[in-house]
Length: 251
Image (cartoon, rainbow, N blue to C red; front, side, top):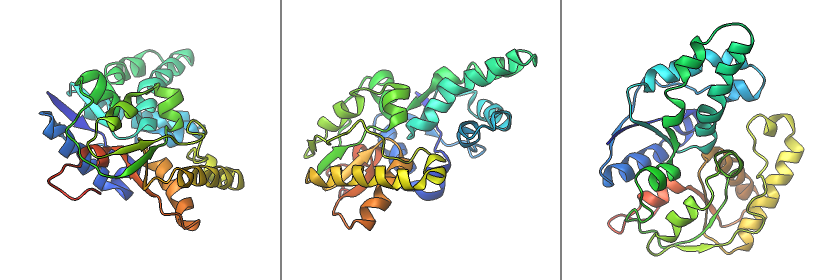
């Protein structure tokens, strides 16, 4: 199977190791992974801030770049949600505004073929044991886009429970938002910081060494808070855990 990796802006700029982990993991599972260099932002930041017309050129570009692939895999629940759920709304809005069906027709093929990493592993490849080894105590934070948007459910938990050596612990208030929310953290900084502190303290209370999630944007927010609070918990993307093996030191 040949798929494309949609790395996303945050990962490309700040967390390239997550992208390398996805390639390593999928290659180990027999998947051929391409990285189309022409990929850019999916337009989520524009859309969520109200600049929906400005998101359309980015959506068209995404559709063109990834059109030839059987599947598009991304280590970001929020960006997967943008493509799957909000690209169709862009097409519907263009139609409602009397601009025809061209945008909807352009975006329709790529939206259902775009997957967040854990749902691709479980739903498309049909695997939960990916051959990983990660001897650490880990808590999982289900991000809002993954939990309430994509409905990832227990997929990440099933993958983590199958990792050899990993001790998965429950996170108090796991389904509560961490306070990042993209531009929410900028526009409502005090509220965002308080929510982040609550999440960081919850993670620390578990005795976990690692807090993982399916979005590095949320981990960046929580990780910054944990650093300021001087907790011993490290933020690690789930892809990096699943890519770890006994042959290499765990991240």
